[in-house]
Image (cartoon, rainbow, N blue to C red):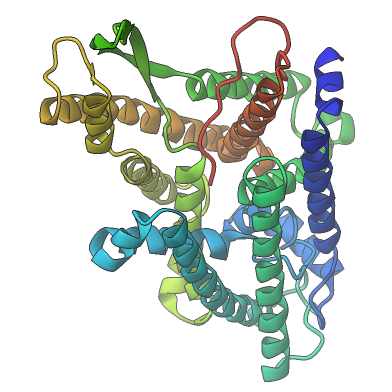
Length: 441
């Protein structure tokens, strides 16, 4: 209670929290605004029978908007995909790489390009979803679309693109005027809002409600979820601390330096970005397949790229490992760290300053990044086998738990920083260790 009183005692922090909650409330209200010309009750019934595939993945990251056929059905994934493309292009295009190094001005220009890419991807994915909705047939999906044709497709594309652009604006406003990273919080809010329904659906599968899940199975599922959350907290707070010694300097009559500090390298420097990026990439083939509903390769995609299938898991793990290394390389430059240490008179004991220091930091970072990538792959993939065995809702998967816990840690850390800057003891309270956060999107 004392920590909550501390939050209320900082006017700026209170305003930021209220602003964040208000924007998230706007997002949740918008989830129930349906695209014109569709019956969302039929879609809800269809998703409950076939949400184990990539449709369920879309629904997860859109916070249930796909099930509601909402204007937010695309979610924030086009923005994330656009960010991936820009970051990959910055590696091979020198002009974009220079923009990344130009500070605030360059960041604004890249953000502008990301917004343009978001709109283009939204137009493409919106048209693919409209085509997919028209191609649905069978007793469950019959009558979902009132009137087929070009008019429906154009109206759906316009509604979905506008919804994604509005979500992008919401996320940027939260980042600028609220607490935490806005894009991450939007995904977080969507997953958390869907958890109560997932719990209800799980209980309906129990023997108490005429299902097949025994009480002992429900207990094991609860233990698994708690264990996964504990493992996420443990690894997200894990660090490799490299000792740094500063040489003594005499300025006038005063002696500066001579102390030893630590250079902390996080086990998971990329945060929750790798699984989100990997999921976004895996959604693209399905989106492309919706444009060609009659092609033979589309059936293979829908059959193989399902969470829990071997092909999906192999590709998913490969993408997670790739994005762990890629995003760490983008956000952390050992050469710059070594140069800054050298300028400040710091050195790693036993390692020569300059290139040798940069090589040493890069070697250590590569090793712990491999461990972080393996941890993240295990968290995201292993629970899917239990899901397929027990029929547990997709929201209890490792990916959703990783996002929820990771974003919560990051937001708590930012609250902590605000409290510490106002000379309060912090959100965690007491004199114990501070909350260790992680980078967000």
